[in-house]
Structure formats: structure tokens, C-alpha cells
Length: 357
Image (cartoon, one colour):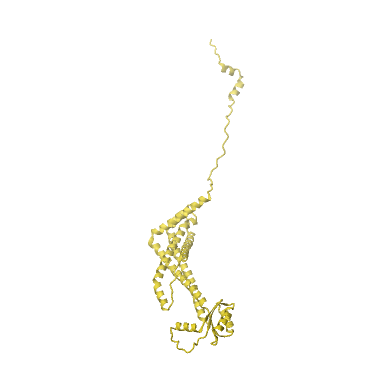
């Protein structure tokens, strides 16, 4: 007979009742503690703030890039762009020449102000001492700026010199010219000068006060007409520059229409698209302004000798005015601004009609 001896584990199992053995076998093990779950990670794009200095540097780099790119496009097609700049220069030369003429008119106006005088003729019986006292009384008037006493001998000498008679009147027994006083008024208004003339005629020893404002008014009106014509022509030729630059930029926009649609499709703004064309317009203005300065210099050199000879034939000295550094800077600034403005108008108008497809 064979005897089976349970092992230690079997003794432990057999010592437990069968019902409890089944329950013990079916009891599940204690689940292991799970590590604490991490916070769910954020999904989507992350926003990151950019420094103002970085944005400013990027803005400057883009502007430099656009300016250089637009300049290279102008150099790439020199003939057509040179013709455009020449048209701008011709449109700028005439207003600039009229501007110089306006400066000459201002100089002429100043000379007219100085030449607007009254001549007080004294009686023939007035001697030098009485003439001196009358001049002091005239000079004491508030509306008188300054006076100049001309003796009878000085008047005769000036009269002979103005007529070119030399000593032809030296044989006269007596000098028929009276002592005179040239009066420079403080105000050159016709009404004020006429009132001053009436006041001086009431002085004792005064024979006549001569005032001739007709030719002064004619020259003044002519100078004012010239100024208005210069302003009107300057405005018209400035409008012509806008049209020339605007038409050129319009053709450039149409030739790059596909490129503009692509960059707008990927999110480019109108300011981004407009920027290279604005620099192109500014380059057109700069080139036209430089050509205008060259044409003005050539015209001044070509006309200076004939004008000087014509003035010398009338016994006067006159030279054509030239643009100084300030005038040249103003001309270049105006031409650049007109080019930029013409480009802005053309690009803004055509960008509104371009839609990415």
C-alpha cells in the first residue's frame, strides 16, 4: 500500500474548508497603485510675443530689401525707365524756371518799393538855408522814411547825364531847375502816398509835389500776374508728373498681377504689396529731379551770355538766377514726393480690383 504525504503547502490548503478554499482562490489580487496622471497637454498653436525692437529691425530690413529690389528693376530696363524720368524732368523744368522768374519778380518788386518816391520841388527863390529847414520839416513827418536834398547844380548834372548831353547846357545864363527833395515814404500804398503829397504841398516854400504811381502800379500788376501764372503752371505740371508716374506704375502692376495674386493668397496685406511700387515711384521722382537740375544748369549756361549782352545794351547789369542748395533740395524733395504720391494713387486704385483666385 502506497501512502501519499502532502507537502507543507498542501497541508495548508487542506486545512482550509473547501468553501473557503474556493473563495480564497477566487479573491483577486490588490491592484497596483497607478501613478498620478499628468495634466493634459495643450493642443493648438502657441502665441509668442515679439519684441518691438525685433519688429522694428524686421521692418527696416524689409524696406531696405524693397528699395534695393525696385532700384534693380529700374536698372534692368534702363531705356524705358530713362524715358519716363526724362518726361518727369521736362514737366519739372518749366515750373522750376518759372519759380526762378518769380524770384526775379520779387527782386523787381523790392526795387519798385525803393523807387516809389515823391519829388518835392521848391520855389526858385528858395536858398540853401531855407531848403535845409524845409527838408528837416519834411523829414519830421511820421509817414516819411527818409529824404535826400538835391541842389539845383546836382539836378542839372543828373539831367545832363540822363539825356547824354554832357556839357551842352553849360552855356545857359542861369540854372532853370529848382532845388528838390526826394522823399521815401514809409508806406507805398497809393492812398497813403497821395495823402502825404497833399500834406507836403501845404508846406511854405514848396512849389509842387510830383507823384507818378501809374508806372509803378503797372509793373506791380505785371509782377502779380507773373506770380499767379507761375503757380498755375506749377500745379498743372505737377499734375502731369502724377499722371506720368501713375501710368507707369499701373503698367507695372498689371505685368505683375499673377505675382500679386499669389502673395495675397498666402496672406500678404495691401501695404506689403504696395511697398515695392511706392519705392519705384520714388526712384522715378529722384531720377526726374536730377535730370531737371541738369537741364536747368544747361539752359542757364546757354542763355546767360545773350541775356547779359542784352542787359548791357540797355546800360544795366543782369544775370540769370540759379538754384542754390536750398532750391535744389526743394526741387528734389518735390519730385520724389510727386513720384511717391503718383505710385500710391495708382497702386491703391488697382489693388482694390485684384482678388486672389
